[in-house]
Length: 311
View: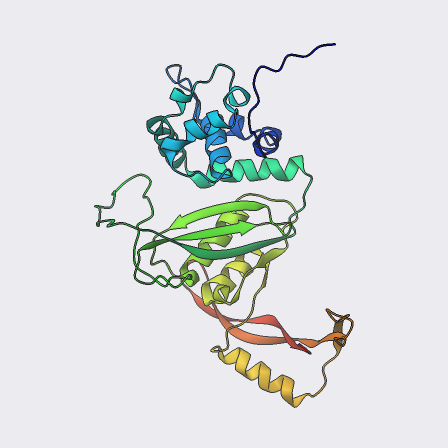
């Protein structure tokens, strides 16, 4: 049988990406939050698919999306009869505005919950962390809306990539143990981690996931309000107690006084020449101050793990 080749396009990895996005039903889920308008050729869901493909192909500028996907031969796969002109930057900007108006965290959460179901993933522990996104430009102070959604405000703050001279926003992300993003938040650039962590934990728990046992976070999560929130929600918290905290200093001294602690874990060395690695530790209970939602401070008994490793 003779075959006629009409066109060859350098599609690269984009059809595989689109296949995963379609398997997760991303476009249809987005369209439930941003219903299609009869006057729009491109729905919000299809527009997000186009943006994902362009970003994962290395092109972030909105005005380049249509041209790049046309070069890749992806327009017919995105939507039959879709023309490059329909992927102009004004329409893509409208889609981003519509996503913000629909509350991005709600949209993101719906997609994440569907992904958990599609891939049958469990979420006994949720991992929370933050980073900063550096911005370039003037970003003059704008009047904050009194009502409705308030966009994150670019501001100077502690930069996690060393650019304290530039304004930024804070990206807060919660993921499953398998690394699947479940919750996203964009905050003002000068938001502190101790303020953000309790908010992030509440947003993670609000997803209503089954079988959640607790939260895993770095030392920035250790504060009175986070401890109180975990007690209120009856979830665990795995974190590293900061060196500046009195309870850590007391437990370090306690561990040194007790000599060799019980062996908890042993692993082989990373190389054949490296000796086995050992982790010794003990579980202890100590009274610490926590803060509840009503602002009340109380001293509660919490469990700490004193750990010593051979590394």
